[in-house]
Length: 483
Image (cartoon, rainbow, N blue to C red; front, top):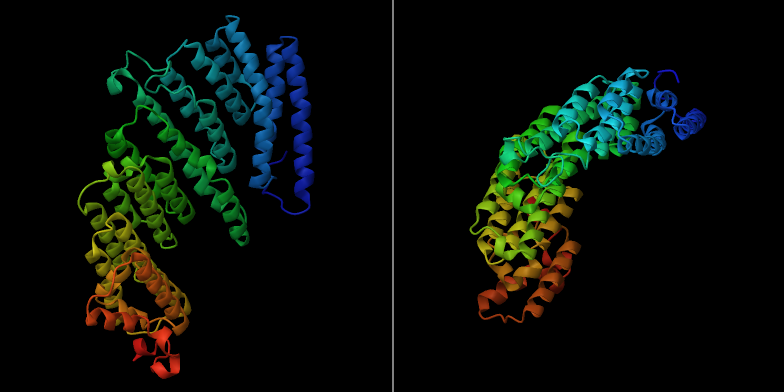
């Protein structure tokens, strides 16, 4: 197939059908050659089959589908190579032989396929073969081709890394106590860095008018990069110190350096999801510091919320391992404050939602610390007072979310939040009614009685929307905030 820009629309099914037909045809001849033990013929037909992956006519989603079809056929070739290995055929010789096959891309797919068998043969140290494969794959710089090639490399070597306890670890290697895990994580890290670089470059493929479509297509391919981080998290030899001193700094350097909002958003979330909670707790500061280095388009709040949720679930499931004191909460406060300072264009709704996220974390991480919740409420009130403007509908919804957070857990203690009532004036009458209902339900379910006239008076202030209609109360949504 010719190397042109991807063609969308009605032509895609035709191109896909033609590529699939050629893959099946070449795979048939490849298998027939294997049946007659014709190694050179099998390699030749496999190389022709792999040439179909040199196309630029397919969209990323269709290219992915074609890649899967080719990968399925390569499994038969891998089994054939395995049979040769068991028969005593030197894998080193086969590894050298495939380097003379076809164009660069087909040759590298074949090299990786043989490389897995070469590692299993133990004719050479795993780290030597892995390093060679890494170097060889640099020969493909086409973003689409290179990204999928590196995914194939990650897949084929996933169970052959010199990790702790692995049969492929080099006992003579002084690195990491002789386990060779440094070779394992270095291989995965380098493959990740190259894969991410190629993924980011995909945004520049094609005409500028197709930018939104390309972003959707790139989003669909993100797993090809994230697989490498999953692989890192599965390495037994990586402890908290190695993660903190080597792994995370390298990943964060790639995140901040790529200057691509889609990649930054995905990779930060990927870090949160794939690595253990204990690792996050020991590296919270550098992770949060990186948030201020991200592109303006990156929604840092959703990243913060995701991390907070992970840590809260960890504390609930393993309370004995929860760090004492307020250091974790304070790190989040510093991060939120820094984000508000460094992002002056942030909308008011996002500012309020950041405080809501912090408030929710305070309630769940330190359920006995009313002062931390009060701090979030007061900070938000001060910010709004300085701004002096009314809230738009989106910001009002954010305020409702913030004010709803303390209700279920604090019950009557909400009365002790110094500026809670002030923030109620920023939202419309109907949402205030719902907050009043939720507050009363929480108070009743807690079973804690009102003990002083002051408490009764404070409660009545908060539930005014249930006692009066809007006109008779003299309130008009956020008019008090405007005045």
